[in-house]
Image (cartoon, rainbow, N blue to C red):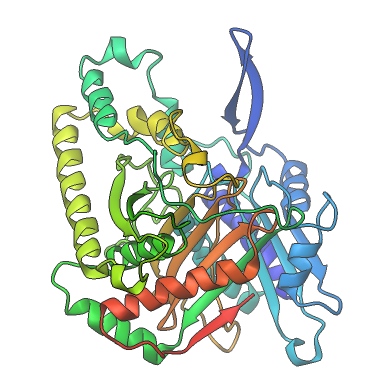
Length: 463
């Protein structure tokens, strides 16, 4: 019955968000290979069945935990899951005697289609619909054909915006130069950037590790943050991440200044909005906040005490808050100049480009090892978005993650059931698990230290 409920809920989600049926395909434009996102509507019941068979997968976990199974089963061999090009829902039933009633849901979506907040919105809607179907036992009959007059309204805002991007922005809009100037102004050089040192340590395995502060400790942190005027949790944890990176830098004979660069990820929303939009659409418009935050930190010399050079986390968090305020003001001014033109559509190409290191970034200035840039994403509080009837479904754990690029590390900050969790996804080819674990603990410790909560607060590790 659980399989029936989630399979039909997945079909319902596909109808509600037809963008889930889109995919990237390669084509040539003026003899240059490029990619475009394609969408074909369902016309027959066979189309619906084929899509469900391809994207809704059911497995037992055998003698393993679902997470160890997930990391071990792949068409690419005994490694982490390979790249996924279309959204896929995986239902894994535990066979462990202690967890016979538990299923684990994995929802995987390509990052060019959706962001992590969008993933949680999809999960929320999936569980709500599955619970309804579980109660009634009624199958969801997909309305066909799927080319009705409401289709364009149901497609994601991103696809609707991209469909209306003019061929030549610079020719059609004289204000396009303002956008170019805006991004050139914020295109900081990455020379001297702080990264987590990477070494070749093993095979290619994508792993996730989480370090969580329990409810009591998290309550102290949230109370401490509320006493800091204007500073939010995302500001403080961004600053603490920068300081933790500083702790992990190679130390030379002389003291030096290093820089932490932070950009928003693609089509970000900073967290769940306080008053959710009526559409509750999981795919947001591309963010225009493509500016770079740069924090400068002191790295002591070899003979100097690391503790004597502790960077002030609260002062850095204030700098993060000021940057955010300034950026939002600049973006608002830019929107007013554009006189109703959708800036997200015009800015999107720069946001994608902004994820790459600038050509003048020389990794050898920091280390001869592979560069390990760290991306930081604040999901926010997700607890209030998963309200299910415990007589049918109980959800003990919810988390999201993004797959890093090469030696990079993707870190997520979230709160679920009153617990603050920092999680990291990394490639075992470049990073040792113990180092990543210590790095996440270091971020938490710098937050505790900045709020004067003490050094000995307990943290829980989940692998």
